[in-house]
Image (cartoon, rainbow, N blue to C red; front, side, top):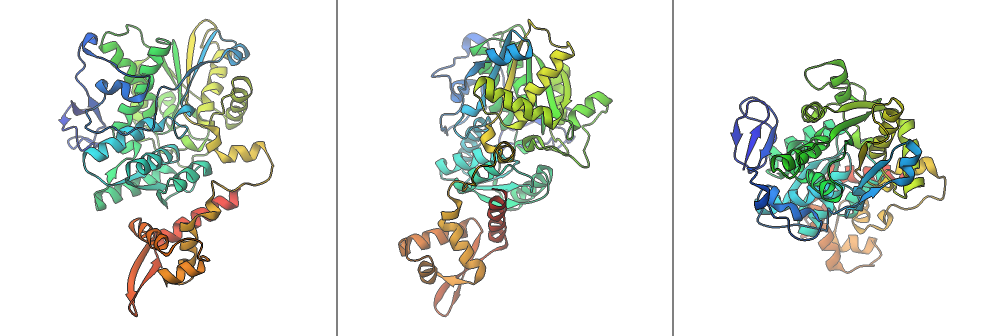
Length: 466
């Protein structure tokens, strides 16, 4: 097993994982020597680690019960759109309610294997939430770089799972640059989806599950942001074919919002390299990517599968989101609701026939996209998962006014917790780079850092949006 460049074919050692070929700058992906299907054994329940034999080798196993998500037969929705066989691969059933839990399981496992104690990840939402949860379980420190435009529900998850959060840039494209620089500077484990090929390996297990649950559909529809997800699904089916497990393949459909469609435009306009959008715009923030670093992979999946690509408007996306919820009881995030909006358009244009089978990938829960919730309801505002009562937040607010020492901070908090707990919080804040300690008059004082101030501003932004 090795990393292989998709352009020049040169190979590199599998670990540490890296995304770019040193010879030509091409994208690296894992090449696993696939043996005869009779030698491949899947054991255990329908869960992510059932497919360990087809994943890069690991020593440890980190899991919160990810994978094994249901393939939901959408009878009412199928009837509404004029289709006989429609299925929704419901990844909202994962532990943190998104498909990225698969990647988080493999990434944290690899980080432990390589003896890292700190991860860094640039994210526009789901992967940051997943990594924060899995890092908490594994006892790892999780640093997350988020753009200004990020779903507040996903940010709340990161905060509750105790990730160290830094805002950088307007879109995730900017955040990726920051995460790459930090990893080089600090030696932290690089867990950004576009910079770690293990993410594609983890997500290809969705294809294995679809095959075991249904077989091979005629069409499989995926929303595209950075481009890696649709390629993950395609790679999974290709491996099943190479193993001789199946002799048929799905045609892949990649969909993007009209205001942010660099991959779709690249294909439809006949460009050789993925375009970079100067002013991307969509309320489906999970796919708000101006310059898709894995766009070449997405194009490869669509072309190799004789697939299609198209755009849909935000209004069509939100209409589809409501339909999925109303007819099938699944609350999908806007990005994945775009798959149903695309399906409706393709059926209307007669590119998909009534008798063909279709699987739509539902990547994450609509509960994470609070801008949608605000558009649907004007009910009483609610606190985000107890942020107002966060002890660490209160300590940061005390230090944002004036440097102080542990005993004084304890008094200012109203002595509601033990003094030992105060020092534990201060040490944890220090480990995450949110505060620094220094000696003064025989006492250890603490001072908030610029990173700590950014976290407070992020919390304030959340409260303004609620």
